[in-house]
Structure formats: structure tokens, C-alpha cells
Image (cartoon, rainbow, N blue to C red; front, side):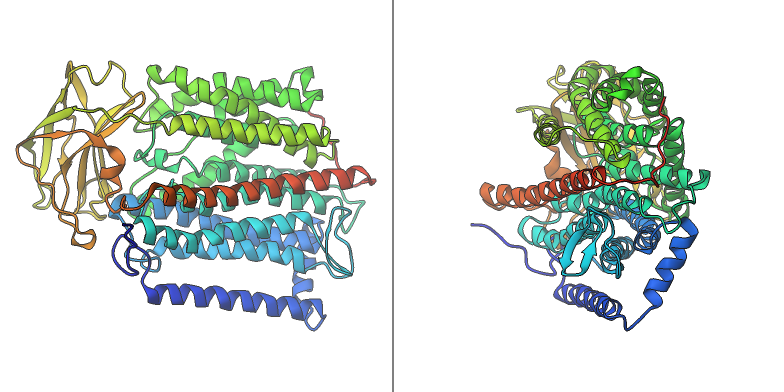
Length: 610
């Protein structure tokens, strides 16, 4: 019998009053947007057009590009801050009491709502003009730019994730992880919206208010920042790795860095020319650095690091010196291959110095087996995007569609491989705890761990660590609610602590082991949690407990009391929504490429790429 968690119960869906508030707010915003659109389209107001045109004169872009992109920049930075803060709050404090009880959610909601509004403004604003030959007809005399339609679609896709997330929690409990399917909708819509922004900017670049006025260095830098936004947007998927509390195999980390780096940097270098990738990487580093400082030291949440991408950028710049760049698809594929090998090795130096969990040498064969095909596919996708943004002819429809489909299949196959996990049967750990100096009266312990069988863990595992998390934030909480102790190996199957970990209060303290496909855990200390009817797991001075699936320990709120078909069906619904968004972006890019290739566009500034 399937159990549906009641509304308002901890670990289930949101309380009814919060659902009503959020639904009412969404309806009010939608009504207001429709009213403004009606007044603008019937020419009963002119302030919206005036504001857009003033911004357009400054950037020499149509108002239907300038105002939406200005709004988008503000909103996406707001959403990014809220997103990183939200992840840190879950790591430090655990589950939410409700969507309105988490301050980070307000930033995310505002950001996503205004992302949708920015796209809608691009649709609403054109009055007396058809915004380019690729424009989509809405009524007899109303046309919308493709980039605006795609931006609104990406925003809507992300917003749909909120009600679906509540339904998901009611069915399956709270999955306190970034990689919950509906969570991926929220961040995926925002991240992929940058593709729509780049397409919208391209449409506007070919319809300048002053065709004789050329774009100066400042606009080149701003366009580089747009690619920096794409790099950041594609980098949100591995954010749990940035905190050191990833709940999936470490082999995903290099693969995801390869995806983001190849698509964004290859597209940027081909579109903007020399040294553009270095500007893109610098912008991404600055934005992520500011957000990390705001979330960590200033807001008092767990600190995070982030990928550097400098190694991949250098590889892309050097590969652009090859004559092969005149054949962008082949150049993108070869550059993706080199980025997924040499570039990834350079990135590993940064990971080794900055991350909690560096990449062990034993992981590299499987990491390369996943990253290389994904890197080649990412390079091809980045090259295709760049060809659209440069006004160049794409390959024949069957070829370009086949390339995109193959890229999606490769990414799906690599993901499926990474999700394969083994939980050892009959294995256990004996943990001897020694009291360390208390923290404000709270018990801190060090551990000696003996794993049975002794050969369960190889000589070079991804990690053997004790994780203490969800202990709350504040000066009386060690590590701002997060402590990770990478254990030191002293013999076959024997490990010792390198620092104290908490075993009191709301902390959840877990022995974690990841070696190849083995991903397993042993609970050391868990508090009594009446909200989800979970019994306490005490931490005596000596304990022997079996290894279990890590997900059952880290996602304590999650309910497994449901038929397998229901989880599969729900996941397939989310997958279908994601494929629709990818297909829409691909269709929009091809539509723009075809339409603008058939027209003269003297306002396009070409870039010497070699």
C-alpha cells in the first residue's frame, strides 16, 4: 500500500496555507503581467516602450532586446544567490519547515518569476515591427522574437518545478539533495535560459536602431559576460560537489565540469575570438566568488568552492590556432576531446588544492570513459551554437538533428553509468569513539574505524570520511553546520580520525565509503526526529553496524513506501519536460539560423578567430 504524506507534515508537502499564498501570488503576478501587456498592446500606455527604447539607445539594440536582457541580468543573479544559499541551508540545517520558511526560497522565486517576465516582455514589446525574419507570429500583426519565446519557456519550465516539487514531496518525502528530479527542473530552466538570452541578443544585434554605429569593446565584454553566465548556468548541476556533500559518485564531477566547459567556452571562443574564453572564465570566477563570500562568511552558512575552468579555457584558446577551426563542427569535436583530457587534468590541479574530495588516480579510467565522449559531444553542441550566433550555415537538418540527439544520448548513457552503485552485502564497520574537547557543551568525538572485511576498501578510494552535517548554523556550531573528516588509513581496513566530529543535538554524523562503484554508509549518530517518526541512533563509545545504502542515511526524510512504477513514472514526466525544453532550444536556434541566412545582415560584425 502506498503512503501519501499529508500536507503540512514534516518531510511531506507544504502546509495548505503556504500553498494558497504561493498560488495566489503566482496568479496575481500573472494577472498583472497580462494587464500591462493588454495596455501596451492597445497603446493605452507608453511608459513601457519608452523605458525599453531608452535602454536600447544606450546599447544600440532594439527595446525588445535591451529591457528584457537588463531585467534578466538582475533576476538571474538574484536566483543564483538564492540557489547557492538554499543548498547551504539544507546542508547546515536540514529540511525546510515549508517553502516560505526558507529565506533563500524568496530569492529563487523572485528570480524565476522575473526570468519568465523578462521573456514575456520580449514577446510583448514589439508593436510596429516584425522583430526579425525568424519572428514567431502570434496574431495577424503581432510577432515575437524567438529568443524571447524561448526565455519565457525556460522560465515557465523552471517555475513548473515548484508545484511539481511539492507533489513529489507528498509522494516520496523530502529528498534533501540537489539532484532530486524536480530540483533539477528548477535549476535547469534557469541555467539553459542563457541559451535563449544569447539567441535574443543575436536577433537584436542584427536590428540595431543605428545600423551605422558599430559595437565597441564594451559590448564585446558584455557579450563575453553572457557566455560567462552560460558557464555559470551549466555549472549549477555539480554544486553539491562544491560543498563536499555530494550524494552521488565522484566520477560525476569531472564529467559535469567537462559538459559546462566545452559547451560554453567553445561557443564563446568561436563567436567572440581571441582571449574571449579568459574573459568568460574571469567573469564566472568573480560572480561565483562574490556569491561564495556572501553565503559563507557573511550569511554564516557552510562555505563552498567552485570549478575554475582555466585549464579548459587555455586548451580552447590553443586549439583555436589550428586551421581546423574553419570546419567548426570538426574543430569543436576535437577541442572537446582535448578539453576532456588535457583540460580536465589541468582542472584536477585546482580540485586537488581547493576541494574536500580530490580526484584519486584510481577514478581516472572511468572518469575519462565518461568525460571524453561527453566532451566531444559538448564541443559539437558548442560549435553548433556558435555557428548560429555568427550567422553561419548549419549542417543539413538530418545531420544537425542527429548530432543533438547523439549528444543527448551520450550524456544520458554517461549519467546512467554514474548512477550505478554497489552496496556491499555482509560488510560492517566497528567504530571506537573517544571524547574530544566539547563545543559549548556538545559532545565532540574522534574515531578509530575497523572495516570488515578488511579488503572492502582498496588502496586509493574516492573517500573514506566521517560527515557531520545539518547541525545548525551559528558561532556555537563547528564548521557552520558542516564538518567533513577525511580519515587516515593506518592499516588494511583500519582508519583513524584527523579531527573531532559532533555527536550531539541535531547533527547527523555518518561514516561514508566510496570506492569505485561502492557507495555506502554507516550511521554513527542520528537524533530522534519525531517530525518524520525516526528513532534516534545513539553513539556509544564502541559500535558495530552494517553498511547500508547511503541514500537511506543521508536522505532520512525520504519515503520508500511506494510502488516502483510510481517513481519511474514521475521521473519520466520530469525527463519528458526536460527533453521538450532541449528540443525547443534546438528548434529555436535552427529557426534563427535558417531565417537570417536567407537575409542580408550588414550589421553583423564578424570576428577573426585565428
